[in-house]
Image 1: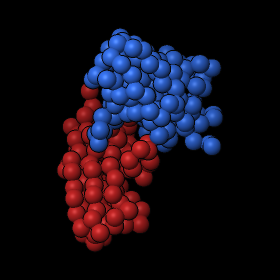
Image 2: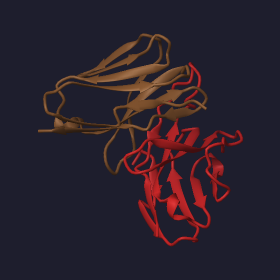
Image 3: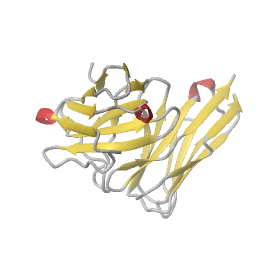
Length: 119
Length: 108
């Protein structure tokens, strides 16, 4: 399909284990975002990639969280030594241009998310 | 830090009723977006408002951006069960800042 895809759709892990979540953005989209969403709640910004610029990591909750984007396309969010409070839906979004400033009104296209459960 | 507060957090109404969801901030945003999210899916953009005082209509949905570009509202006329979902506002001003969402349930 032409939309944003994420894998896995569900991940159950044990406390202390590392997990990797994958995002395939829409081809040609230069901006990629990761968010975390608790049940029925709003989106918590985690990290933002824009082209070749240094990523905006200001939303990462701790140094256990990291993300990379290879070749300006696929992105992986890694959570090390998972904790129960990490349980949430992790959403990825991409946009053709960044959503900032009056001139850049990029619509963010979201993937279906990865539901992470840490036991 | 720019914060967006949505109200109400939960809304449960009968089919045919009208409703309004509010999105407020002390910060000025260059634009504001409204998204709708259904269970198991990512949010989908409904509308983007850019100009202070702007009003946009999308069928039974009316969106308004405050004159000072600090607040917005979403009004739904004659709600239908298909309108059920999580409604999120998001302000653009650096990066997109999301409100905590309003869970709307429309009962047939």
